[in-house]
Length: 258
Image (cartoon, rainbow, N blue to C red; front, top):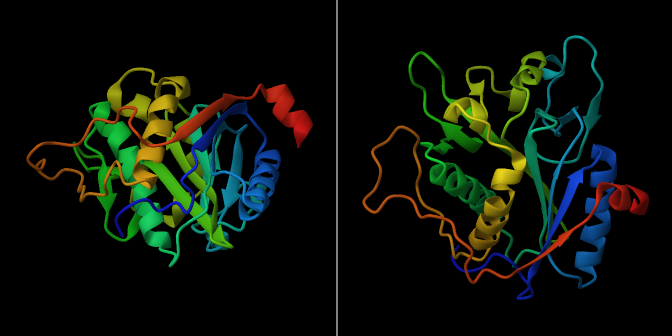
């Protein structure tokens, strides 16, 4: 599918929420999805969560924490993962064009995050059969996931989304089988680049890239980590004609509104 995947021509509203509890953010997603179905605008929530494990519908018992740590069961696709400080979480609440193409939607989210990672100097791409954004095996390390994606589409409207590991505590993933994948690793932008890459540093670039990918300003391409680059290289993500509207919401205000 080419062209915008969004059913609306109105600007995407970008909400930067700071740190929000998982339950409160999930409730906000549902409220925004109801509003979108009723004709409201598309929204992209960007935030961090306090440390929490969340399980998608395909999570198996052996993939959960072995120490009995609580897990929030969700209605998204995928398996178990961790969210916490230093990880940028994005929840696009988007009305999709018909006929629905959920795989294409996921590929566009991947494309946006690949572009951001590439602009930082990382060899990021996809792995066949596995969603998310990956870095290639090298120097005795397995392939490593730097961004996870798990979505739900209901009434032609998206919920849940992506998580980009910026400068988070990777040890939190050791208690689970992240995304149900036992033969690969998990990494962060900071770990790969050898410097601190904060959520604040990449947040605006991620917002721009997601809007561009949804509207096909940033086209989906083949990206195989570790493969020779294609002629012309990967595109740099800059603010473009992709419509967006940005608002910032203090955490206290968000919490009181939920």
